[in-house]
Image 1 (spheres, one colour):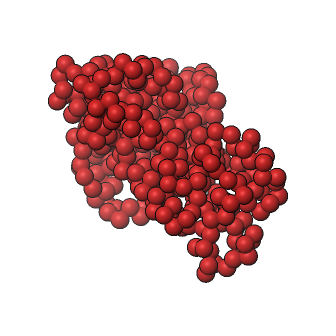
Image 2: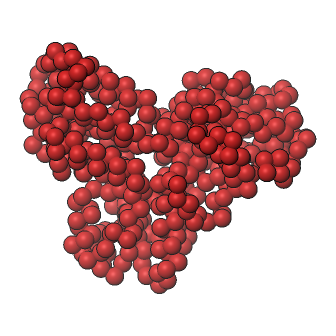
Image 3: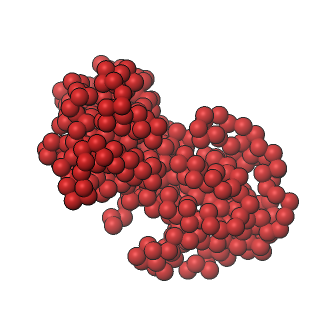
Length: 408
């Protein structure tokens, strides 16, 4: 896989040593068990896969190269490059301005942009309407498009199955940049509707099998369906694609559920399912899948708590928190600064995004066992700073340098 030129400020000697050792020992990526960092009175278990993915490193490389190669030019981002406050703050510190917030609300009017400006498209991609608008202004988006290749893979798969007459069901958070972009691309080829979760999927299934009156669809899914969507015919033949940062298991469950609804309603067999249901399992993002599988494997380790590091508006990070919370006290933080001392930290609720002070988060025992992972947009350097903060509270038997050497 391509190696990217990511600024050293985001790298970590410790995490790099750990990841390199795991890659050499497990070239086929079959071992999802965590890596033990044994400091004596505190033991930290790092997930097998975490941190920057291919798409994020690609976006960061393009963004920083663009800044370096264009001194004096105005450089804009359509919205956050990725969902990490540190990276976005770094870009802003280098003069990059955001045109929209993460929900599409305008910060700087498009009218102020000229053909002499540079506009970076973020890793999540953008809608066709925005892309056409920029091109009409004479802005060349191709060179500065950081859309993740795996997001584009979902778009390409949508187009491919649309050509075969399928409508598209997008599993995604309706207001997320990537979902808006995927909806735009899919709906340019075929009838498209967005479902947020299994509850909405069950309701959608009732329109397929006739349990609900067709006219109710347009109010229930308002703002979620493409122009001209005909509920009476556009769900007869479907394929499910995903926002790549959703839980892979959730997308699969949604796909399996709709498949069974279609199968039962049209009395199909497994052999002729393709007549009405497209196989789209290949649209699941490898990094999202690996990170989630690694967390599931990590949770088999006996531990006292879990810490998940990443941006609070990061979808993929929130899902890692969701997985951890099923088994352990879990604390969602975006930097080591959230750890006030060994008795208190400030954690974020992944559902409500509310932050609260947690007292006595570290148990009075030895050794304390902590599971740690991070989202796909979280720099490894942040993970190391969290580890350093945690071990500073204990009389550790090894320092970071010694540990790095042990992985060499």
